[in-house]
Image (cartoon, rainbow, N blue to C red; front, side, top):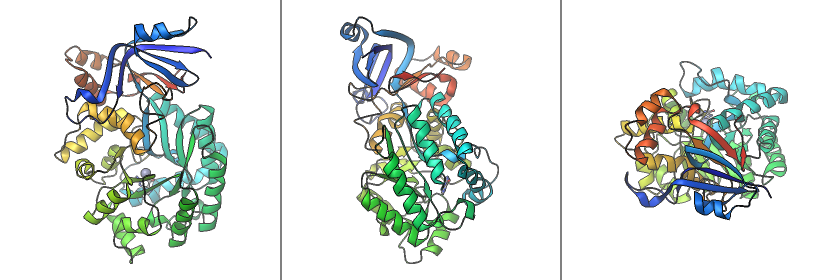
Length: 431
Ligand code: GUN
Ligand code: ZN
């Protein structure tokens, strides 16, 4: 099998860095190399050592002085919202009705969907994201184009067609039976095919009847290896309406709990305005809160209590939430995440930030044996970062004293120009 050797400065995480100067949680190699073969990382180490192991005809790609890191993982975004980003003025419920549902209705058309899927994955690759966890629209065709486009690029992705059968226009609604049948067919066609995983996706309590949540629970029981994704506690009006729609529920989380939708494969978008009982139940079930900073600021939803949840033992993920979110870049997401934590009197230090968008998110997904690290045996999803990509960054880098400082500059000043290359399963994806 042909081999590739990537040379550069290697940074990979072993565990979650606990303090700003905790050097025990990562591996940094100044003149490092990754040996790639068959879409996998075969070896990771010092250039001289790795080069000596490589076959004679190995292709050497010299990325010095760039940093090589595991590809970024975006744990919550909406594929049919590529034309919803930057829609003005509204908070969550109006934003859904005025902008989002009309845009998602167009995904009934697979030709439109396929065109958008191409652009969607181009944007992810341009920003160094190699794994996406996406909501598709309620139309089966939208999930088909999402998975087909990801498969054509050999990307490890998670996704699912949204289930929604009320409080939205007919052209974005399914029914409990159709939602169940279409999800079931998509699971049969895509879950475990190549690098794809399926996520059972009831949009949120407001847009699903009890019958549909019951059908989602049945799918979850029948397919325990699938993920489950939904939204919770994003916005006060959303919470109040949910309480009216489910008067018998103890609180918002109890709606999902009642239908058997919580567990370690459950990704709960937002988790901003959580009650103590909800936090207890979230922690007990091992469900994963997903922090979406650019979206939470853009929609004026509120400030995620990262430390509060983390200290209770919750494994928090971080995500863009396109198109409530405003950037495809996980680096920009970490930038805004830093600011949200600041407003909450908390600190996101740079080693923790880069852990979060790689091994941290992989761990939240239970995929840390496959992605999120550069360890030998991992899949060869890699991002190449240039901290001097723009004149302003190069100028700032002149005074940089440490790896942590360099990472912080990347976190705060980056856009897609920082991403020099993105490898998916060992293949270079940027032109
Ligand atoms: N809650 C239900 N649907 C959505 C959505 O599409 N985006 C966000 N941010 N919140 C939601
Ligand atoms: Zn969302």
